[in-house]
Length: 267
Ligand SMILES: [Zn+2]
Ligand SMILES: [Zn+2]
Image (cartoon, rainbow, N blue to C red; front, top):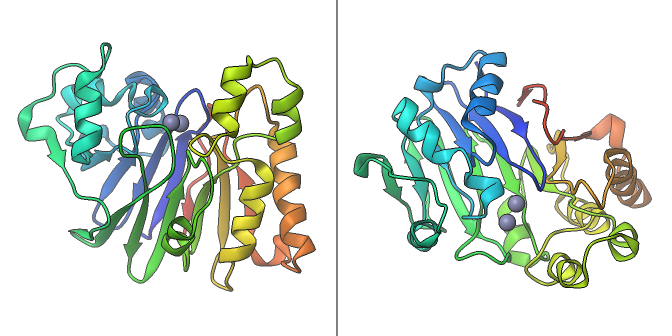
């Protein structure tokens, strides 16, 4: 049993990622219905009762929609930083009542050692209370999750460096967004410093953090309106190839489906 990641859903309409080490089962976000998450876990043979915790990146609904339901149904701890908890509590349609024992507050930028896993959360620029990305280290292997990125800064790059597997946002194609049907204020939000990451920037980040042991990259959190899986894939692939990185030989590059479970990536 190795160190695994599987996307149950990834996109602007809902996010949920499974992370498994030999001793720990986690979810990062639960932004689709509890039922869909249960179905996804069933496909990969993980009993929801054995999920040790749900790590929340931020309080937007596409990341927390099913969190309360799952926590109540299977007695699963929800894990988030203080500001994110406060933001969730203030929401009109939040996640419902959570058993105080399952309400775990963690500090970001600090190692959290849980059995055979080191969990670390780092700040990201996004229009939420205190949004974070996560990294996981198990047996000297590293998995990074970096989505909902308004822009890229050195803090993000430093945190996702030396990963063996990265789930990275490739939200939109800038031209599709600009010429598309979204209202002006939404276009501004997405393009803004605290919005979402475009395909081209995703490619540039990967060029920057590439190293010989980066085995797999999953592009995720795609916009339904302003991107296509093939376009995200080709844009990122082109960035990598034009920097001399041979995609198929060196890196397994894939795009996470918005609503279908991915294969299990194991490193
Ligand atoms: Zn968000
Ligand atoms: Zn999101």
